[in-house]
Amino acid sequence: MGFEILNSLPSEDFVEAFNAAGTRLQAEAGRRGLELSWIKAVPYGPSLEHLSFFCAGQAYFVQVLDTSGEHRLPRQDKGGSAPHRESA
Image 1 (spheres, helix red, strand yellow):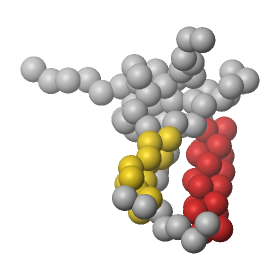
Image 2 (cartoon, rainbow, N blue to C red):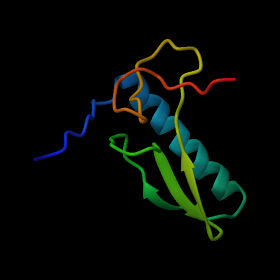
Image 3 (cartoon, rainbow, N blue to C red):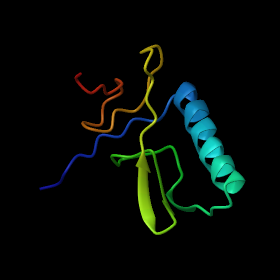
Image 4 (cartoon, rainbow, N blue to C red):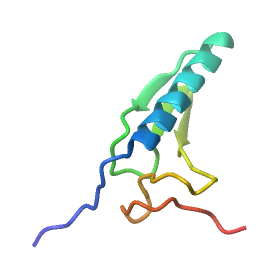
C-alpha cells in the first residue's frame, strides 16, 4: 500500500511571482537590519507554504496567491493546479 502525493510543476507565472516574493522579503529584511534563515525557498511542493523562514526567533510561512485568478499556481491544499481562495 502506498500513498499518492499530487504535485504539479509550477507554471512560469508562479515561478516569477515566487521569485519576486522571495526577493522582496529578503530586501525588506536587509533594509531593516534583519536576517532571514530560509526553511523552504524552492517553488516546488508538496507543502502548505511556498516560502518559509525564521526571523528574530519566529517562524513565518508564506503562500503566493494570484488574486486576479489569471495564472495557474500550484494548489497546496489538495495538490491540484487551481488557485486556492479563502471564503470571505
